[in-house]
Image (cartoon, rainbow, N blue to C red; front, top):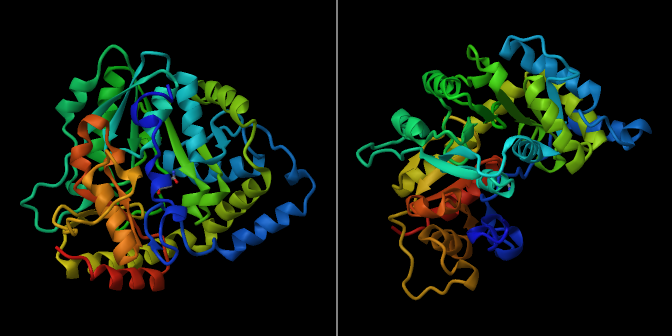
Length: 410
Ligand code: GLN
């Protein structure tokens, strides 16, 4: 199935990876931080390396200390006394966890619903396991909206209902949403939940940006809605929570009948996640209970978001102010490029957003991510209007990027 269509060609992360961009380019493409995780977490990681046991395999479900910390962290939000033996599974990053859910549940021919645009690996997790992805639009803000928010990207429930067939197995929900930054409202999630119940569907809810929700917005876990625990797996990530994207420690929270088959898959894929950084993630969650880390981090991200968005305001370009995550979508349909500009072969057949992204990285010195790859091939045109900027960077770098961006022409 790797041979199908775009799965085989170079992916957006590689084309816009640092190796292909000018060395002095400021990378606001791939979402990783240019600052360290908090010292009290890296210290915990170093201490973990000094213990013999944490240099060796952990239980495939994850280190008990981390599962205990997750039980505390999620228990109150889900209003459940989580069972660390069956309802929490630690994985090598949220991606591997979600791939394992698909491996455990998606049978050849099963359909999985994705809201489009979608974080691009979702599509491959489904198709690599023999499933078929079915796309439901997150409709972009109407042109008439002067200052759009990620909230103005909307779902049409009738379209969602119409996408469900007897072969539908699962809906993938992503809130806060990558790349849009949308935080799904309780009402939207209630409506999705009602359809999942009516048609007996699983829900995989990717909530890796759950601690990055701004302006007093509420992050609602779909698993916490009445009747949803039994059909939902909630996904989280140490990388996003603690500014440590390279640690590859993630987790799944859900009922035993979902996590047991997923564990069977996960054990055969990686056996267990790396042990020392599970210790550190556990220490992080334990300490964050008292040191207000998540509140402080939210504040810092609010400032970072402002630096970037003010630069777009000065340019007079439209963007969707994100309610959550660390991404902003900028509408680049009015950005001008010289007609004779020459692009590399890797961009042949790709959308205008790839060209804008490439041009910007190579002339302005700021890279961002083209978004058409977050769409199905049928709908890629819609994505060509946008590129995604990551603001998980320190203020100095963002201010520098903001200055360079003033050189864009429209
Ligand atoms: N989730 C991160 C992003 O969207 C990184 C993903 C990746 O590198 N594949 O930028």
